[in-house]
Amino acid sequence: MGNQDWVQPTLKLAASGALQTLLIAVVAVVLSIVMGLILGVLLCLPRGRWTNPVRWLLTAYLQLFRGLPVLVTLFIVFFVSPSIGLGFTSTLATIVGLTLWGSANVMEVARGAVKSIPTAQFEAVTALGFGWAASMRLVILPQAQRRMIPPVVNLTVDLIQATTLASLIGVVEVLQRSQQSVEFLQLSEGNGHAAPIFGGVLLFFFAICFPLTLLARYVERRRTNEPNRPGRRPSKNVTATTTPAV
Image 1 (cartoon, rainbow, N blue to C red):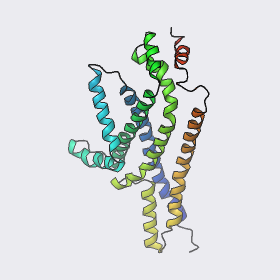
Image 2 (image 1 turned 60 degrees about the vertical axis):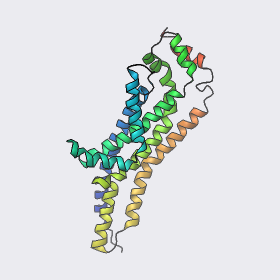
Image 3 (image 1 turned 120 degrees about the horizontal axis):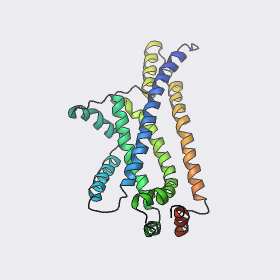
Image 4 (image 1 turned 90 degrees about the horizontal axis):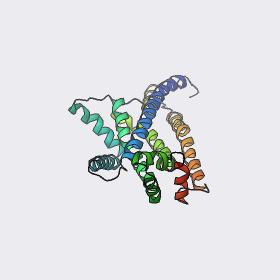
């Protein structure tokens, strides 16, 4: 019972899985945020002959992948991709599946943040002669981005936690490595040391996710306590933002 020879090999094995988890998480989070913000802004295009089909397609994408559980999305990407000639590896399928799910949720955040800006600001910017793209870039998005940060950070935490589902399609990440270590030690020594091993997994995810949740709370608290919140005097905000351009 006092033998600690299992610790070092287990740490090395878990470390290799942790690197795989971090790789998947970083790539999926970056792609989800970038894609979600772009598609979410495009979802706010004004109604028109050529924009309506774009809005319909984006809405279908949003509703489809927001409505699917993450695990179902991963299974669809991994098992269906070979039938259409893609044949993703398990790691790539995980990244694609998490990105599809994550970008759809970021889209909804971006759309909601843009729509929360008072309509009077759109009207004021239009009256000054700005087009839709310039209005979004100079006036609307600078205000909306402050409202996006807390929910996007929370979605980032959800994506990081969802990487553990990758083991179900064959990705050897930190949870899978830890399970392998417990099973091997149970067979070889009669003691799997499950408590310290899975406790290490808990600390690994806690060390990553807890600071992000604190960041989301801090940003939300700071935005809520701002004395000059968006919407208080929209016409003044618009004038201040657009005066240099005029």
